[in-house]
Picture 1 (cartoon, helix red, strand yellow):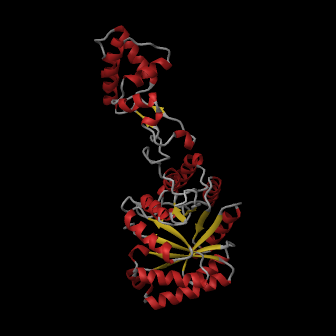
Picture 2 (cartoon, rainbow, N blue to C red):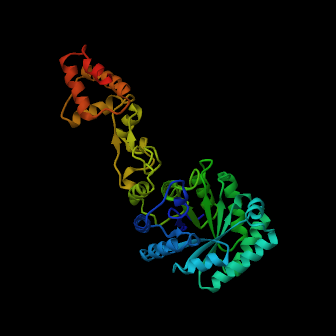
Picture 3 (cartoon, rainbow, N blue to C red):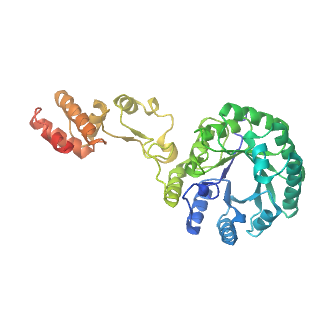
Length: 388
């Protein structure tokens, strides 16, 4: 596979991300997110769902006008009325979605396969005739019969669709199955292919990367994996994975990911977990003595991803699992050269304090421990006070 194959990133934070329980963006927040996405190199931005009404239509229009390069997309159901609503937003790209699994097709729409194919032909043809660039979204495609799925995509392509989005709506797939399905889709479908994964099994990112490896041209993501239930594939993880695993290339600017995550986190009122891949505060923070000793000798010993790649810096903290290398470095930065005997006692005191207070130990606290150690190796009364 060509390692330089260009993968299009389609971000749905403003649409699927906002469907996360309790999340509601203001117009100003939508504009800020959209602009940050564009500045971060995202190609396509799903700006909302026109069928929600006049206010949503106006906000999609304003968001689209705030973009200079990224394509704004309106998400619609497979109905002519939704297409008409999308036209009022002024956007030129639409995703027309329809359930393609038997259970959703019948329970939600009361359609049989023949009726579904007829609707796909009719609505996509109507949207194309209106001058829109059309993508077909296959909702619940992961539970669809492959023959019906191929027939539906074939009808969509004949009617004017340029892309098919395969949605693992319930997050039930694994990377092996995704890869097999996309190999078949790539072999039998001539239009562009996109994967849209949900994270119910914690596999959305892995599934998206598997789809890309198998031939998907587009990856659907949300910042921080925001979305319904367990969320969607995370933009920061997918973009980094595509590059670092040599699956292709994107236009995403990796150093902008942390700032973008902060903007979305603030707007969604959802704190970023410290250990969140790529953008968490702790992902380039090290405490373990064995790791720190190796890092101080060569960062490649325990960092496969360089913090500089993301415009970030490495941090070494002191705690229960720290070793003498980290303690010695922290003292040397303060101009202190401890003797081997002092180091032995100081390391023990520092670990005890960290366990008592259940957090990292700051450099001033370490220096205070050093001062106490120099006065007496046998009087750690300050630790008892810290634990009180």
